[in-house]
Image 1 (tube, rainbow, N blue to C red):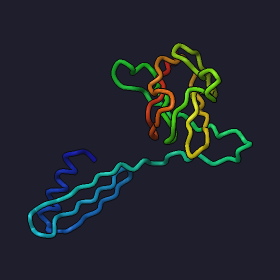
Image 2 (tube, rainbow, N blue to C red; image 1 turned 180 degrees about the vertical axis):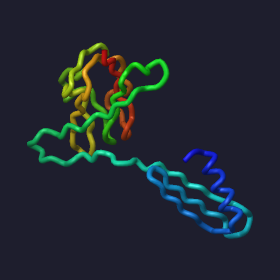
Image 3 (tube, helix red, strand yellow; image 1 turned 180 degrees about the horizontal axis):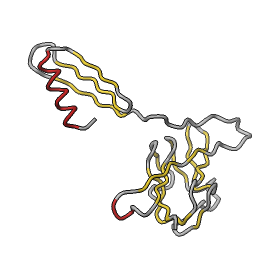
Image 4 (cartoon, rainbow, N blue to C red; image 1 turned 90 degrees about the horizontal axis):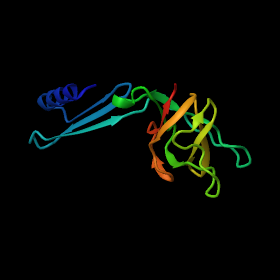
Length: 160
């Protein structure tokens, strides 16, 4: 649903005299509330709802953390020839397995399918993020120990 359709929906609801309208579609949830004192005021809430996101499973402390699949999609503009590896979960991004160990990958590192690229801590669980592609790391898009969101780009990989 684009911005024009949302604006038209707001105008329609304001003209109809309804006090509240809720619309839920596959990836968008919209609630429009109009003022109760006939001033023509309206409040609109638009919320994107992620569709079919992977859920990290909790494992016992003795077992290794599950390897969450890394999402990949072509990036825009000059980076279009690269594959973007995105965060499959919300958490804290770490480039090292522990503070005294070396980083998993650097810019220029060659990677293969299944190689661990980083760990993301979510609720005290460290989830290893493995590569689903082979190639060369071109850019690391997140600083170490930074919070990351679901589907946030982490790495650019040159698949050639």
